[in-house]
Image 1 (tube, rainbow, N blue to C red):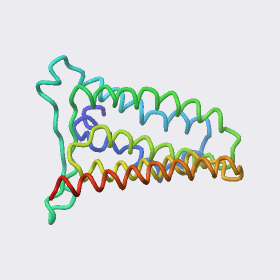
Image 2: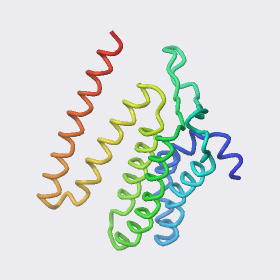
Image 3: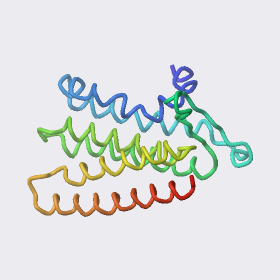
Image 4: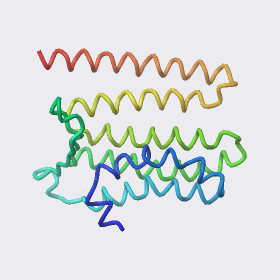
Length: 189
């Protein structure tokens, strides 16, 4: 099974987004089991990246891509080199622990589905961000990270401080996204 997953690395990077629609069904079946199944996403991601650990990765980075918008000649392109590998391992390793802890911490929460969906989207966006090989994928993953972090920070939306913190985070990441877009426009001209 791992050979099939490793032959299509883009599916591994975006596994969280692909699994998100199934979360309500998983939590309906079993809350405890769903926490373990959902936490497999960052664990498989970690194993995938660890599988590519190689001292020569800096000299021979690994590229993989698939057609995204063929009419515009835009591809979903990713790169595993030394720096992206370290950040990817950090994100997936710490992400695995957060998924396990979050499942136990929110086990009585009525909106556990929403938490799992948001954390899966955030995780996949972060992985896409650090492994992005082209500026289109980088910008899309940046925006997905901004939106999902805003929703995660404001998860307890009943609290005024959570709403305030989420708004501040959205403002900072939104301004960062605009600066990134301005930089990309300057680079393209």
